[in-house]
Length: 253
Ligand code: ADE
Image (tube, rainbow, N blue to C red):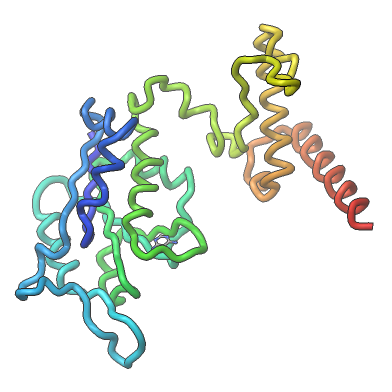
């Protein structure tokens, strides 16, 4: 059982998402549990102040160090030692590999900052800092929910069909997922690739592999560098990229 805890000034924002759908079902099934801590519980003034003006001047307020230090000392004082994750655009980019690593842990605390930033000294409490991408959110809460979602769905039993977490984008081969279709085979003239209707599983598998390579080569060529491809597959990907470059060139001239 994985325990995910959050430390935030908005502890109430997590449940509506995490109690619904697949994450909610997985909680009820005892696959993981969520505990949300209110950072203001570790303040000592009447107004439960968590922020203050920056030394050196400048706009905005910073989150004070003390509530974080006290909260994490309390939270960590019982149970297994938690893996403490902070969210900041300066963190390591969050990827499927990171999700897989976190899914193997027993207890994670997601620390969610707000406002203009945090006192730099809090980062010594972090086992790691993660960034969702090169953009700025108003706080770490959404980032924590994104990471929670990506991690929980990897836990054994969280998805009804345990195969469905294996075959998809960014899985072990590092490719985008192949195109998928359901009925009808012809939707107002938009047809499904013949091979998928053939019932020949070997041919279907081969088509899916090629489609995954094709989509990756055209949509996310940066992923090819680390993708797990045979030499022949790599040549196919290069051929597709070259054809795309030619087409682009002709369009421009
Ligand atoms: N907090 C603010 N912006 C963020 C980002 N891009 N990733 C993670 N945490 C953040």
